[in-house]
Image (cartoon, rainbow, N blue to C red):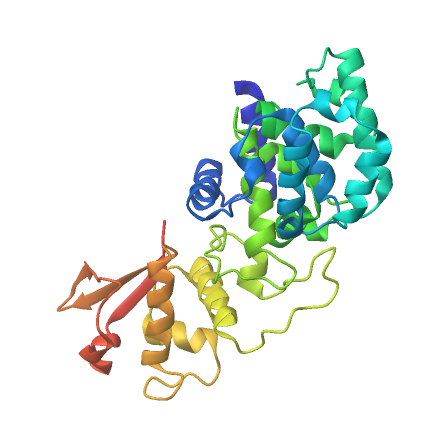
Length: 337
């Protein structure tokens, strides 16, 4: 993506959400991915053949089940020439024995290997358009191989990515024809397609699942996420709302949304805004609320400050609750900038 294209990308994101700093937005996800991602063997290689095999195998098949099958496949047919040199029936039999779904995918993969040998001298092409010429390779797979093997693909959009974008951007869910491809491409950093596409797919597979795990998986986009702030976690593949009424996650989201709307608030003021039964000395009072905002501070989502004798100083997120209700009453909370 050129400098001009990057400017266009930022403009596209601004049209969706004017509060997003696109560089911060991108860096949060990449940092999260680099620290948190699951280990899969095909992520440890840039061999386009091995990556093509993983992409074909993982269509509608759980990744955990693909791992051993992929290892066995690569051990048996370590190169595209080895695969092309064996019989189609051997590949189909392997596919069936490993419960990898539709056998026609095995046939297509074998045919694609023969095409690579016959038409590309045994070298898997790097260009997405040439990858599309291979049997059984559609736009998604071509782009995935180009990204993960050659770092030159466009944004990869699968069901997980659609779910993420739908939940994060309220404008997408309001659109008659949601612009998933446009927004995904606009988000893509220059020359980072391998890392970025892995990262956003990982986000959908680990944190933004059908039943979301926003806090458990330390989702890096909670600060901006419409679903997190409103509690509406429906999505194209989640037609009914996952149940979490009254949960800690629900109130974390309310806190983030409320601070975004009103700026810095005193702890008690915040409490009254997020629940009607808030009582400073009650069960759902200052101690309860302080514990939640402390968790949010630990996650880098909010700042906690204490006002003392007319001055304001930064309060450590590890402040002991034993300091008492009077100390907690002087606390102010704001969103992390």
